Image (cartoon, rainbow, N blue to C red; front, side, top):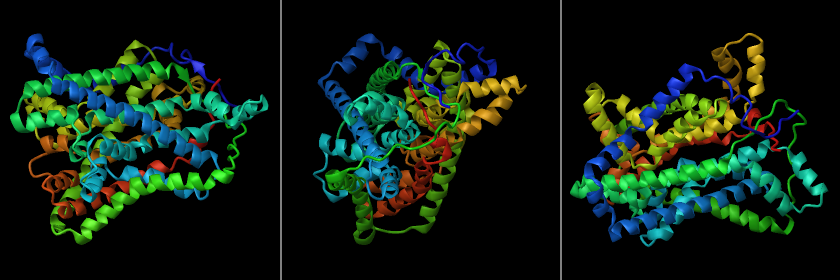
Length: 523
């Protein structure tokens, strides 16, 4: 037995538990600290000076670069992610499990490591073309993974019905399959767009100026806080545009199932004469996204004149990276639970505001988030300044959207009727959540934590600003060496970054769990 798509109504008229609302509001307040910092600074600047700062040709150029790159990469990652997911899940492509693992593996290669790999091999790979290629190859798994998971949940009976009505495969995919992929596709594309607004390392190496790179230049060279904060305000507006577009396109449909039904998978499409072209395309993506960085790292490890292996420094940076990434992943995932619970189980204007507010800071550069927390901690809670706790809070603010998007996808497919049955048996709200709902969304919780872990292990600027004295991570040590063009010295840290990311990437690859194979049937 399966359920069909429903409009918001089931479970939305329940009274929102005050503790749940308070927990979600507390998370939202934390994530809005950087926005409050930017807004207060903009008010101090005043409208006249603000206009003079923004009404410049350079600002227009940065705006054009930022929007063009974000739109192009969101479209490219969406198209590439869907195409690769369909090739792996819905065709008779040889060695599909192997290709699936290789297509997910680029998540283990940070974007700035990917940029370092390409630039260190060919200095001509710069500007818009280089940034577009490197960012697309680095971020397409953010769309590919959720689309693969969604394809595995779809009921093939709907497609078979369309075929029986005379629809072609192309029309069936466009009218039946693609609408069901909307939550996964929009969520992945939103993450790509938000991450691009705040991307610094890869774009700096590739010499493509955007608002984020300009903000770092302002703070790092002239210390012009007014101009940098004004540009951060523009990033906030761009973020709001993305969020409103996502909210408009997502709609209010609910996808869930209440029974296993006739659990089966779709019959793979025989590629026939298209087998070799499809194999060549998938192989080319793997070589460009994974082979080139691997070759570059090995080349600099072996042939780099500055290559060295300082065991003590490598060990200390590795330990700090693991501890901070694990702590940040746990805290961020836990913080996402009340936000998602409100957004899915208690929909309304308050829950929508709380959920959307968690995305705003993701569009701000890490240096702006770091400055906001420095100011807030010194004024309100001086004891937390330059502590690991403040750094973990920064990680939660920066990467909460990764956990929210992933956990929400799981909770939207956990049937509300099971909660009702649990309540009818005498279990309270907390007991129902612990014994019924949380086990159902456990795979999504794990995937969200893995995504956050990957992001934190490669975070650079907030770590540089907020880490306790004497603390260094693999990312900060890599950046220190690569920014001085000591590519050989940077290679060991880059290699360790990749190795650290492998376990989390393997966890994300496990989308063939029983929870991922449940069927979802939109009406």
